[in-house]
Length: 180
Image (tube, rainbow, N blue to C red; front, top):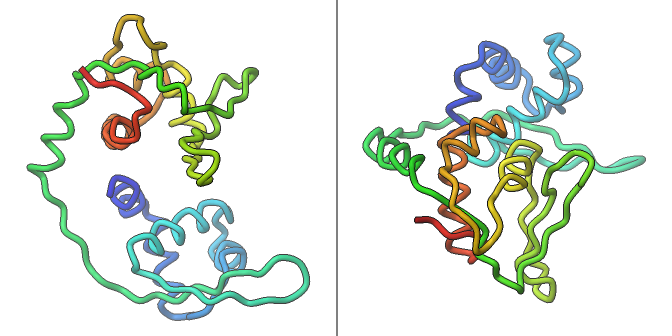
C-alpha cells in the first residue's frame, strides 16, 4: 500500500493516468516520450497501478522481448489510518537475523546489499529485493548478536519505515529474522 501512496503523491502520476485514459494500449516508453518523463518512472507507476488492478495490460509480441500495452481501468482504494499507525509503532521493535540455516542470500559485497533471499531452492521460493530493502537487510545484525531497532536500520539504509516494518513482518513469518 505504501508504494501506491508514494505514487499517488507525485504530480507526474496524474499526467500518466490522464494520458493512459485518453490513449489506451500504450507502452511505457511511448508515454514517457510524449510526457517527457523518464521511462523508468512511468514503468514504476504502471507496475504499481497494475499491482492494485487500476490498469490492465496485454502483451504485444514482436522482435525482441514482448512489450506491455497498458490501459487505464480505474477504481478506488481505502487507507486504514489505524492499521498504518499500528505498523508505525513497530518501528521501535528490534530485529536480527534468525540464523535459519536453510535460508541463503545472494548479495553484492561491493554495493553492500542483499539482492535475493533464497527461502527454499528446491521450490524456487525466493524474495528479490530492491536496492533500499537490500541495503536495509545488509545491515541486519547476525544471529546471536544484539538486536537493532527497525528505525535505526532505516536511518542507516535510507529505507522507508513503513515499508521496512511490512518487510520485517513478512520476513519474520518466513523465518528469516527475529523481532523482539
